[in-house]
Image (cartoon, rainbow, N blue to C red; front, side, top):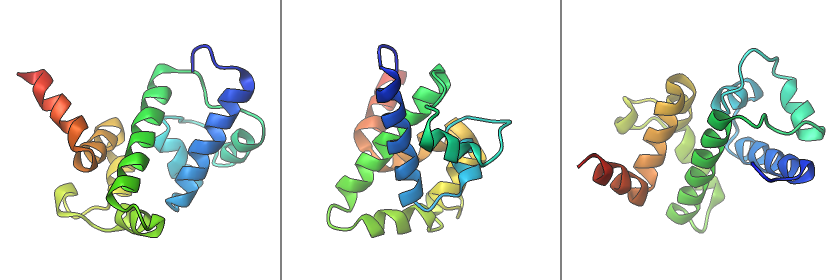
Amino acid sequence: MVGMSQEERLELTRGILNMLDDWEIEAKDQLVLLGISGVPSREVKRMRDSRPLPDEPEVMQRVEHLICIADALRTTYPFSQRMGRLWMHKPNRKFRQRSPVSTMVEDGMVGIISVRSYLDCSFSWDMSGSKA
């Protein structure tokens, strides 16, 4: 968010929160996913109304991963946003029978990266190539 105006930051915040709403993620879990701790769930409403996401590297990294997950879901289910939402809440063998949402909330950044890697083969390919 470096170089973004206050209005652009607020627009990004609203977009991310709308995306998490579309995935039917509760406010308290939205804060967890965004790496914002120690604040009440009602903070989500304030952020949507007038307070942009904190301009912190970890928050921005999480936002980037979440946007890429949304893009991958749109690619995987191009004709049905509902299918992407269902997938996010369905237990998955890859995540030890937890849903992708539960995996991301419970495992933090590691869980978010796991879900992104599962959906986005180019991201997981880049990660595996960088280890070589």
